[in-house]
Image 1 (cartoon, rainbow, N blue to C red):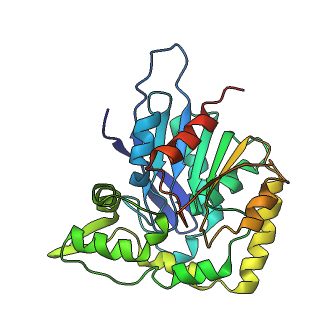
Image 2: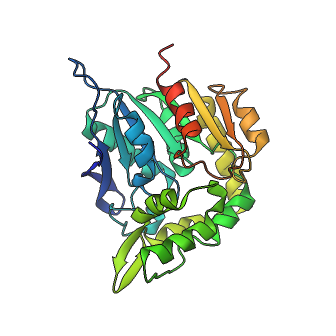
Length: 294
């Protein structure tokens, strides 16, 4: 199967019920009496689940690959109360998703915000995470990077065409590293929804409201809580880092190799925040870690 199937799961928040969309890439490997293993791939703050198309195609012969659109993004519902766009609620939604998938165990790959959701879930007693991949994120997030992201997050934008929108996204996403025109067009296409005679970005602008309330002091408090969660993780963990990342510092990455799950660290030259997992060396790093039976 070269295209995923769009499905939905109903979740509960303080403002009521909402639907979370997820993209399911069917397992294409050999038939077995056992259910195929599940890999959950979760995107960054303003992205969506189709970011992982290339990776999913590379791994669907070994996994049932599930790529959710976190609430407020992509094909998922928008929340009535923007204050609900918070990590604890995202973790709760993922627990509901795992129950829907009937997956008692799963591997997890999270980019940026998706990695923070993974840390939150993998830190819980009795959690289902077997292997964890954190893509350019750790417990300490550089406040300057948050300010950079806040400079464009939630801004009202209207584009005459997808190509115009893709050019705009490239202007704010050059830290992703080199991409061919075809790669960038494919990565950008799901980032837009029709609006009138043009297109708008796919996410609820209100996701910026809790983000905008972040101060340096709140960021420090959040980092302390995330380090406590990180230190509780027991599963094998891989950390991917763009060598030029402004969100995950070299010091934080090194600290993550020495405490908690003592991550294996892979860095990619010429890339900032965050590796898009489209190119062979990035895909190979993920596959080698996830498929290592040791």
